[in-house]
Amino acid sequence: MAARSILNSQYLFVTFTKRAYSSKADKNVAFLGLGNMGGYMAANLAKKGFTVRGYDPSKEALAAAAKNGITGASSIAAAVEGADVVVSILPSNKVVLDAYLGKDGVIAHAPKGTLLIDSSTVDPNVPKQIHPVATEKSVGFIDAPVSGGVMGAQNATLAFMAGGRKEDFDRSVPLLKAMGAKQFFCGEIGAGQVAKLCNNMLMGITGMATAECMNMGIKMGLDPQVLLDVLNNSSARSWSTEVYCPVPGLIPTAPSSRNYDGGFKNELMVKDLELASGMALGIRSPIPLGAVATQLYRIVQSRGYGQKDFSFIFQLLKDEADKNNP
Image (cartoon, rainbow, N blue to C red; front, side, top):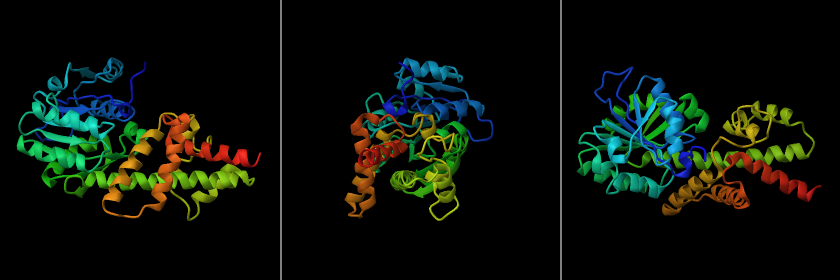
């Protein structure tokens, strides 16, 4: 089996021992998660002059990482030993909690003074559970989820949304700059997750709306390229039309033009929408469009396309239109 995605629960711890652009003392950094996102992030760190050491339960993942100059570690404890900073990107609440709070986890073995940066997308309550434990152990912790997808990870153009103590965020910036182009301090611990879930719910809604309207126009006889050009030069322009068009063949770099592979998996969109829905329920914030989007992406997943990019929803709508109007 090929190296599993971070989205499929594999872990990686990465250690840097060289900083090419900062005089700060942080030299040894552990990074948890190597897959569609983490693999590129780790590779970019190595390219920036860091020495990278990683841990992952997947031998395939470690082998793939080795090709990018990453040396493997035998365990989490071995990876974080002597670390100055730990960075992680993991697929679920449980995996993050286990990795940080477990008996053999990060906090149990990280040296005092270590900075922990979790870039996973999880419930805002997860970093709120980790933060006090980290503080008690005299280590810093921020939540810093990312936006930009696989292309952003590959090209080091990710946007990081961070929550926690400002001084911990400031300390993290040199590392975040090595992996991305934007770094936002959003407020107290958990605020980064709130920003990320709002972003992803809107991304899911606009992606769904773009697929819906593109399908309608094409079904009415419009040339797909002409329709896309109209949208991109009119008030409907968005990231979903300019960068992530769900119609195959119109934007070569979009997942839709690669058989909907290598993007942000539909099952991950469902997870994030469910997290956002739970957050909204907790504060009684109405999300009628978010609720509809969640259900439609769930339908895509129930039909066996959870591993495809979330823009595959266009094919779901197209198939329904074809059935109703053969």
